[in-house]
Length: 390
Image 1 (cartoon, rainbow, N blue to C red):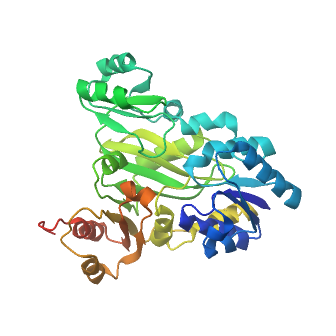
Image 2: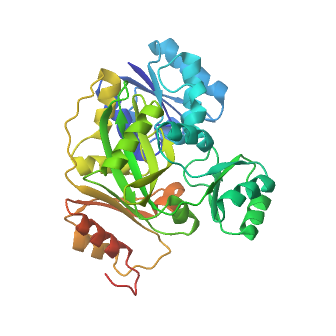
Image 3: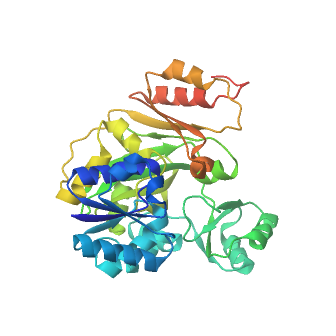
């Protein structure tokens, strides 16, 4: 099997996907904008061959790279990046080289938040009222129905970048005076706790692995207000959440892909669909999959692609939590204090690359426990301010 992998060096820990593909017997053919000598040795060793392009946004250069690999290895069987930013690029290249996976005619449904709403509704999932707004008059017509606050975000945005909460007319006027020149969707503000339904589906859309996470707050607030965050995997998924998540997997035709579906829980057993991402959940959540269930999701994905292996006997043995810290915030307990207190539960400490720090903090603690109360107690200690209490 020949698998083209875009930007195998970013994020760094995703080289584990490539390594497992190679160990499963695939030719792993990397394309990236970093010169080969700048790649970490772990990345280089995970690839069969690497093709350097000066600009990953140069479609002609990417086509030449894939043409070279086709000439050298034969038909390309899969093309992946597992990165939301490159989803549209992946789809164009799959069209050009007739590769299995999401194609160009499907991309708007999974990239544009306005299109997602229709698919959520088709799945029977409630969504926030909203619409694409071209100007302030469009926005005011929507707000006449929803009232303030509203949330404005790029219709095809990535994560919470350039996403804003608008609480009044002054906020609205300022937003339109300064917004970037892209289509924006505006939605009523939904108050609730964010839950996700995450996992991996096989070629038939059946779930190979799935789990759920609960977030202390939204990524929009984390980024825009410079907060730290924690989010925790659940050992038991609320039945209604799982039911809605499975409906979404079917409605969005998830095939041989990871998925990350976000909901607001607005009340007991009530959920509002937020968005779907056809890739693994961000940050170090793939590592959290592994720690929570004692599995290797990198190997599971590779075996699914290369050998069609989809049987997985797993259990959620632990709650696994990611808790971040920001360098500019004062904390009651030092890093060494946290390691001394909770070293038995902490399974990984990560230094977050700067590009992710606004959402994931500058340092992240990944820890696990079968007891949710213990998880939350540790999070309170990690985030306790220097004059706070446990």
